[in-house]
Length: 183
Image 1 (cartoon, rainbow, N blue to C red):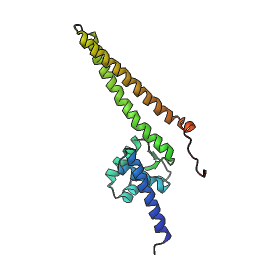
Image 2 (image 1 turned 90 degrees about the horizontal axis):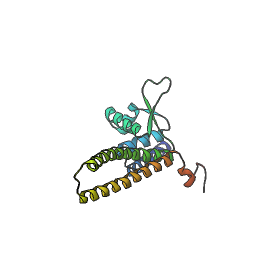
Image 3 (image 1 turned 60 degrees about the vertical axis):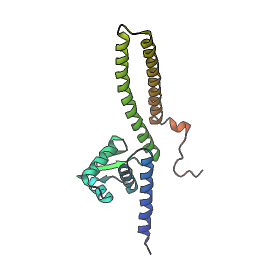
Image 4 (image 1 turned 90 degrees about the vertical axis):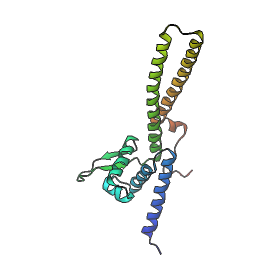
């Protein structure tokens, strides 16, 4: 018969796997999801060595995974007096983790869109300034300009949705259950 420590470890492992699955549903790699779950369930920051041992990944790979997590804003390096190695912690609030993942993904999309918009507007402005466009070409260009305006409005909306989440305003409209509330 298994002892209570083993059974508790099994439950923790199941939580880690569910966190991994959830992160995967958000478009995050299994490795990142697993590391996030491990640090989260550890309840305190961990070193690369500890994470490598826990996951079976090499320290080099672990370093890459943690760097990706930092880029996604779901992990951060922390200092602890007396500890010489880098320690990494994750956000412990599920809601905040979701917001960080959601907004970091959309911020990258917005940034890519902005670069695209600038390139396309430059090309269309050059075409508009060129002499000798046929009436048909002008109509086609105006349609493209109209399409670009809709595109820019859409990405402005995404930017505002991102700000809505980051500001916490979302919780006024879709409240989260606080821990301990049994409704």
